[in-house]
Length: 337
Image (cartoon, rainbow, N blue to C red):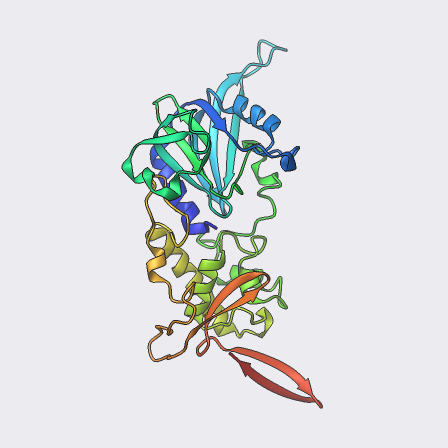
């Protein structure tokens, strides 16, 4: 699943290419009876509503909140008819896109071929969009400049909906999300306060809980824990304060590096021009099962375990788990790999 760096990379690309463009048409082949009444484009009746709101609107800004892409649009003012003194109401909407497991947004020129039932949107340019991972297009915005913004999503898990800009913070899609880890205001005291919300939680599960901290997923949690020498299943309350500080620094550094390298393309992720990021070339833990730890002087092996139904990768030497248990009133520390 795209995490903060991949989503931010996408937002950076959209800011460059689509801000200021006018929406000419909207297309989708998402259609599922299981999502009826879901207020996403997977419900055909909702898609009709979304399409009506978007056609003719101009994109004014693109932002990120956690793993959500927020595309701000502004339609022609709607005039109140009750009084001549009434001011035109701003019809500002936000197209909210969560890319989920395999989604990514692509910008370029496409040709629609209705004879191709499976993949009707054919890339014209740029050539980088012709990567096989980019061909599973299920949602398209066409602009007045003749280009398209396409959502490629092989597993069709992505979420696309529209919300009122003025009520964005109260939206069910946004209001429960924790603070942004790369914001300057997110300092160590703020980080510690978030961890203290779940002292009995396992650290990796706490880090990837979007209600606690925004934007961190499997990849960047594994890498941050590797850098700070913390086992992914260690309970938050058993980690000493020095390790908390090391973890705080590692999260900031690792996420920033992910953005600088254009995200992680271990799986499907590509940027808006269809190109790979390169953070996956720098992995120390994630998906390196059985390989020797590359921490200087360590000599450990990268292990994999299941934690809450998800994989966690860690070094069996410098990320040892410390479990405390009481036997006959004595405190015994057991170290397990």
